[in-house]
Length: 506
Ligand code: ADP
Image 1 (tube, rainbow, N blue to C red):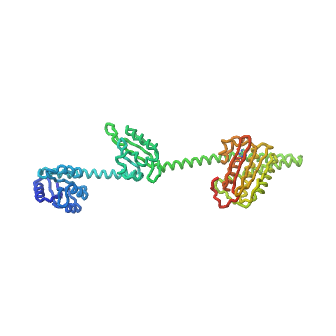
Image 2 (cartoon, rainbow, N blue to C red):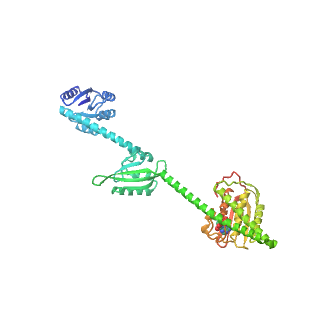
């Protein structure tokens, strides 16, 4: 066996004695380098590797345990055997605690003892080097894992924490090692989470594997959802020695799941809308088409013998049916634009009193005088800047609903009052009213209240009204009592700008 020894000894007599003892050994071949000063030893160790250092702690330029620690800094993997005097046993033991592989007491050294100490020291040093290497490898895996990992005592005290967990929580290992895991700031956002964690630790301590999704608080205040588990590590007799607490960030997965659910819900909503649309269109178009077919058929077969008045009745029916279908198509087009967010808003100067008076006249004509429709102007400056087409659709829908949902002979009113910068429109009827359960939802496309009975309709009108009010930057409210009547009150700014955002709230 060839051993390279660095002898650090300032006493020439002791150095000679050691060299002679080594000479007597037949088992080892050696190369001995002798130095008297610590700085010389440091210089040698920095330049070339030695198998072992035989070290006297008291040197001219260093003394005591510091001599050992300074050499260890230069050559952490080299075996060190400390040489002490007869009365220095305590310091010898302390040096072993600090990492020296062995010590020998000067004056008691024999060749056999010396060789044994050197060989054991080298072996021990190699073993601890391998251990350190293995520790380094495992530490690297432990630290570079994407999981936040803690090694705990069964009572939940942190023994080890990996770099990922430190980075996430903004802690340094010194702040948390030796403390209960629930003192980490990541658990502080909710007393419930902390309580849950303590229950998990207690369960794992009884030997159970615990796993759950849980929220953690990161150092910059972000909350992430993690797949959290506490695994017990047991010995051969089943006793729990350690707990491994791990947390894997699943926020992205959760977000993706939520996104998929949202898309599915939207898809479902769209397919329901499509189904409702097809039902509504086929139903709402069939009635006027039947009227046209019926009246046209009668006119063709019998008009030769009919009075002019009777013929006229059927022509008017056909015209009304066509008008109804045209309005329906117009509503469908507008709803399509609303859904695609492409409905244009073009305000123009408008005298609201004139506009409303005309609208009421048209409605009165359409209604064939079944209701008394009154326009009441309550005053104010009614020169406005609004989108004429949208306003017509909005008030037209509200008026035709008021007519449609109230019994023949009952009055319908449109009130207009212009105050400062606001125009207030009120459409009042004495009809069936809107049940409270339906009031929130009647603005939705295709939604119809539960009391409509056989009164036909599409559920499109109020969705158009809502969007028209939004585009004008106004508000609308409903006052209604079942069996008594309904009043819609819309408040719109008198002057609306065309640049107004299409997405302003109602
Ligand atoms: P519809 O074509 O069914 O009238 P709307 O969108 O115009 O569709 O109205 C939605 C629902 O609101 C109607 O189906 C009806 O239930 C209710 N509604 C609207 N206006 C009135 C009103 N003046 N009186 C009673 N119910 C009304």
